[in-house]
Amino acid sequence: MQLEAYKIADHNQKALEAHQRKLSYWTDEIANAEPIIQKLIDFQIAIPSWALGTGGTRFGRFPGGGEPRSLEEKIADVGLLHALNQSSGAISLHIPWDIPTDGEAIKSLAASFGLRFDAMNSNTFQDQPNQEHSYKFGSLQHVDRAVRQQAIDHNIDVIKHGVALGSNSLTVWLSDGSCFPGQLNFRKAFERTQESLQEIYTALPDDWKVFVEYKAFEPNFYSMTVGDWGSSLLFATKLGPKAYTLVDLGHHLPNANIEQIVSLLLMEGKLGGFHFNDSKYGDDDLTVGSIRPYQLFLIFNELIEGMDAKGMNHATDLGWMIDASHNVKDPLEDLLQSVEAIQLAYAQALLVDRSALEEARDANDVVRAQEILQEAYRTDVRPLVAEARRRAGGALHPLALFRQLNIRQQLIGERGLKTIATGL
Ligand code: PSV
Ligand code: MN
Image 1 (cartoon, rainbow, N blue to C red):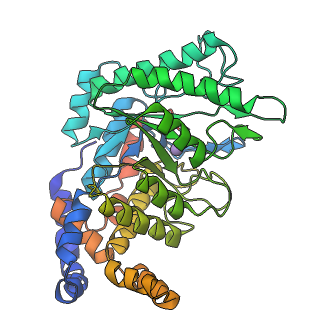
Image 2 (cartoon, helix red, strand yellow; image 1 turned 90 degrees about the vertical axis):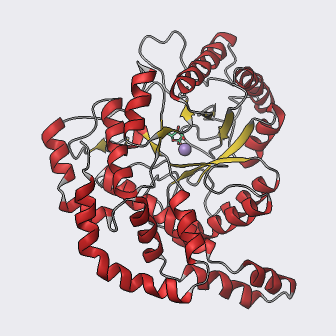
């Protein structure tokens, strides 16, 4: 379904006065409100094609109805999100969950919603029907050359799909590893994986990047061949300048200092992209900012510091994507919440007084340094984020409008109650 612009205009009209009252604090008091609003307008967060349906655990799945039945309907869902918030202007496809049969048609459908294609994701962690070799014992690391070749060919195929859609990056996440001590020769597994990745790297078009995503555990529980940022960075460095590390917030051991990882990867010029989600225990894939919003702010603080130090463009030089699963919420509502949480953390981090922070650090003034960060974090930047949305043509309150227009009910009417989307 398409969301008519007048519905957003009506909604904004009704909410405008209250919004302007809150915004006036910013425009009157804060010198850099305008550049922050512009940065927020430019910042787009890609939506994963596999997270538009209900997620689940190995114990069960409870679909809420109206899930997209095809790639076309998934694109329409992301189009809806983008119409509401004007910040979800890209979609990231997972192959083979979402194979575009007619690249040109899919590309123009996406363009009709103002969407482009972000990183393409390969999948060698599941066996597909009619697949010749199994990935039970790994893919790019496998002891059998034929299995490795099948996984390499799949990745090259994914690149080809991406080229047809105008994407320019490939994310490789491997579940390769081992479940028990003794199962794997770590060094040989690394070397085989490196060799396989090198073949994929060679097939990348000149203007493409490959992101090597790491994960500490799951589905392998003793060792993961790309288990941490150290091994990802090793692979990326050995591969060459088109290879980068991808940080998924849920892929660390408990209490890891992700902001420090981000800082060092940026220093090395090797941070390529981000998968946003939140977690309390493991790779919980919860709504961004729902559990540790201060950590998210600290990560953005390092992102901005590190990107500015290198003269990087915040909006375009890294791949920004959500990678979450929605087990008990409406996926579209959950995604709206996640996008907003990312924007809030970004806006708060843009508020940090960086020269004062450096002065405090040079003076070993620990208390002042903490105050500077927390002053920014404790600022209510919601009016700034809403203003950025409004100026871009989005809704002042996307979630409220989503509910008010009964969008999920309409989708159920169109698609039915029992539809199931491909994905997690
Ligand atoms: C793995 O947990 C992961 O984070 C990778 O990015 C996958 O591609 C995605 O989730 C979907 O399974
Ligand atoms: Mn991920």
